[in-house]
Length: 218
Image (cartoon, rainbow, N blue to C red; front, top):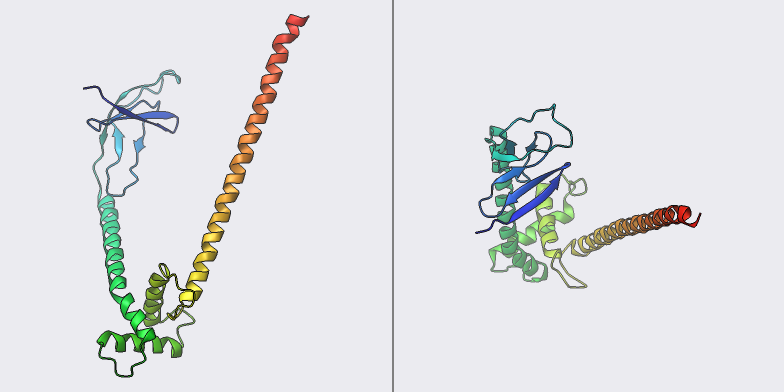
């Protein structure tokens, strides 16, 4: 079976990765270590040293092997997994709490039979009288605002009764517009560079043509 190679151009050298057995071949002119993008993955390290006295234009080709992971790599991998698990648990908790939030802001019963309704109403009432809310130091307020933000991400109501929903959606829209503006500016710079390169290429081409036709005409 023929091998299929994935060739990456990195730092002036080439890294060829066969898709069959996932070996890594280094063709770079200097010894180096290829760091993995994932903190838990092992980096690739050269198994041979290169004679530094050889010609600079001469390249080498040999296999790379995975370097052993140290304690720092294991800690980074565990931290990433812990953060991902915490984010998933927070998302699941928000999905369970958003219906209670929507019910509480619309419920007019003073003695609602739902325990979650009374709890959510107390949290909503707390945000109106809390003195630490403006400085962001109240954990209870921050928790409710985070829940309102999770709701606002998918809310399509023009006049939503959920507190902070309108201001959160407005902030997100402004951030999205700013992001699009930055992308447009980057695109304009890229187009301007391409046009400049094309113009320089045409000028250089015309200069070469004149240089070739000049002696012939003489």
